[in-house]
Length: 257
Image 1 (cartoon, rainbow, N blue to C red):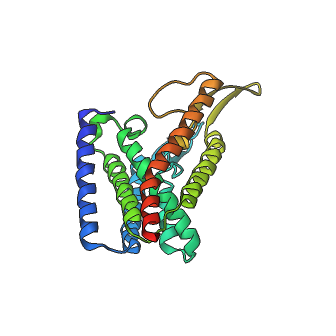
Image 2: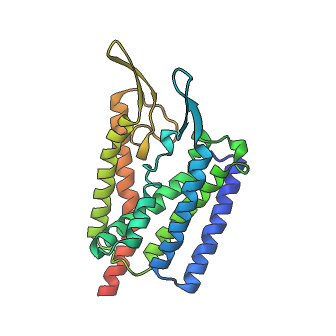
């Protein structure tokens, strides 16, 4: 984290975001048009990711070889889940559901993507730092998360969403449900090792939504430490989501006054 390669990528992403936001402010396309571009980026991003990480893995007896995508690349992280939401809000005709999802996508795209760019897990799970400009996964990772930030800004500036305290509440409910479900998903996709029917250790866990381990490398060795981590995670989520929503809620209230 914060190697010279990382810093260069952050500068590239910042320039790309600034240019996209400038073009958005200049041309003022509809949110539907922005979502069209986002859908295209999502498709390209997933194709690059899948064909970059898929590997041929032998069976236990070595008689067969299977194509395999590592579980940590499944689209179940907060940012990758946005792909399904982007397609949903683009094509759904349910206006109320669309507004609820867009209200959630605004803070989750913004905060999730900023966190991902600041702490790029790609350098610890997918590629080496010295591959930052030679591996297609690096381009996929940084450009995809830059797109999410642009989308979040477009949602906020579009004027198509009426941000209220109810929007803030609904966003917290969705992220809370997703976080709780991730506890199950992380265990389902983990690789436990049993000996005589007794769980001995875990060889791998995907850590979707970072509910199992923190993203900054602080080791959690006791259950109470994990409980404290969850409390901190919830508190940070509530505060940062509030910071995202408050200016928009205040602006909406003034416009109605």
